[in-house]
Every structure is written in structure tokens, then in C-alpha cells.
Length: 333
Ligand code: MRU
Image (cartoon, rainbow, N blue to C red; front, side, top):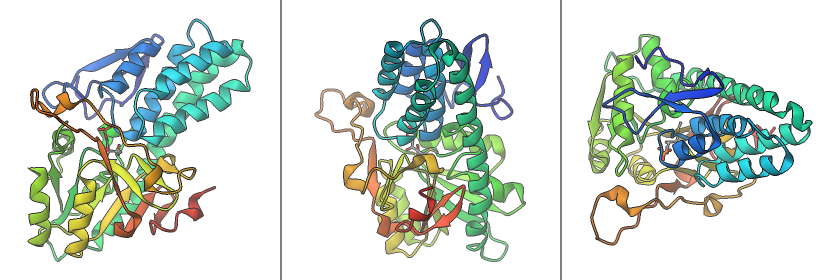
């Protein structure tokens, strides 16, 4: 199935279809999620990944999980099963809390229909938020343009449309600039060990945006050589003080960007801001299986995320606009 023009989430016959990201970039295969277990598994093994998309699919997972029984005990079970899939991306926990709130206050007989409706609303709101991020972020790219040269953007991981319901977060301003006819080129870091950079390269190619894949460790050199005008990354959880968890390797890019006076932006919808989490120290960091490094029997540590302190972040772009990382309070309501 062609990917560029396919909606990210398709509903058919009480099932949900999404791209299986573990098969990309080789194969664009739609994955059928028919049960709670399907949804939880897809999130855990990263067939579905990226904080906003995980949130939306978790919401649909609740709807799937209530198909035969929407009583209180089943609701508890469904929420707990999905919450246990991945710890860092707060969108997952935000979406589950929102689903639970709406469902608890409704009669069990009405919950199934309400769950589908709320999941659709979460997905639609993510799409709208990311579109607004594109609008707010594009002027930041434009401000860095030097003459007719392409604006050189560096990103990490995949914070594009594959990671969201539509548009992406970090890539939303890139797509907006490209659509507006601004010349833009993206340095895409490979993102070991799961190589989400290949997903970014794939979707940029589909959209016709010029890009170059680099090994993660090449980022510092490119920043030093003046080949990057700005860095934009996504986020999995932003603490109230602006400290930001994102895919491991983000922090090193932020350090190098600061050393070479290159602006470093984080783009994320408000659903990624965790006002209950005071600082980065309280953000749970997912430790994934060492097998992902493919190192055989060598002892391995595999933290999947790191935390970039607010002080290294030039600004956070959300659907509300651009704010200093230390000044998120304005977005609390
Ligand atoms: O482990 P992943 O692939 O789910 O991690 C994804 C990231 O770290 C993204 O940068 C983040 O979720 C932002 S997605 C718009």
C-alpha cells in the first residue's frame, strides 16, 4: 500500500490498521490491530512508535479492549496492560488517563462507543496540533536562511509523520517550509540501535525533501564545520521545568549545538508536557533489551532515551507557539 497518501490510522470492521514500522523502510505493510493484546504488543515491540502515535494507538487499544466487556474491572485491566508497555513517552500515559476519565464517568453499556469516539478525538487533535507546530516552527527555519542556500536542519530519531498521527513534530516545520517553497535540507542521524533515522530518511524521500543520512557520531563534526543552521528534535516527555527526554543521543547533539552556537529546538504537542513531573530527574528512562545492540553475549546497557536540560534548549515549539524551555507555565491550561 502506498504510504504517503494513506491515513496513519485506518478503522475498519472494529479493527485498527497502522503501518508496521518494524518492516520499514523495506516494506510498507499495514498491521491489523484487532484486540487489546495486538495494540499492547505493537507498542511494546515498536511496530507502532513515536510518542504521539503511541498515545493515539493506546487510546484505540482501550476501545479494542472493551469490545466484549466494558465493566469497571475490565477497564482497570485494559488501562494497566497498555500503561505497562513503554514508560518514557508521556503521551501514552496522558492518553490513557484521558480515556479513563471519560469512561469512568459513563455507564458501562455506553463505554465501547465512547471509547472509539474519544480515541478518534485524540487522533484528530494530534493531527491539528502538529499542523500548528509546522506553522509556528517554519519562521524559525526561515530566520536561519542564508541567501538562496538550503536551510540546513539536523534532526535525531524519527519525529516525523510516522511518529505521529500526521505531519510529525520536529519535521512539521520542515514540511511546512518545503511546501512553502523554501529550500531545505535535513541531516538525519541514524539513531542506533533501532535506526529510526532510516524511517526519517524514508518519509523525507516520500515527501521529496532533500536529506542526508549520517552516523550518529558525525553530528558533532557537522556542527563544528558550520554545516547545520539549526537542530530540531521531538520529545517523549517534557518536564515542567523544560528538561526534555527524547531518543538517546539527543543530549549529545544539544551539547555540540551549544558549543557551536547553533539553535537547538524541541517540537512537541502539549500532550508531551508533563506538568506533574518537576524536572528531568523524575522522568523514567526506558531500558530496552540488550539484544537491540546485536552484540551477542557482551554485557550491554541500552537506555532508550536521554534528558536534555532546559538550559541547552533554545525554544520549545508547540501548537500554542514558541516558548523558552524554562517558561512553559504559560501553557499549563
Ligand atoms: O523509541 P521511539 O522510536 O518510540 O522514540 C521516538 C522518539 O524518541 C521521538 O523522537 C519522539 O517520540 C518524538 S515523536 C514525534
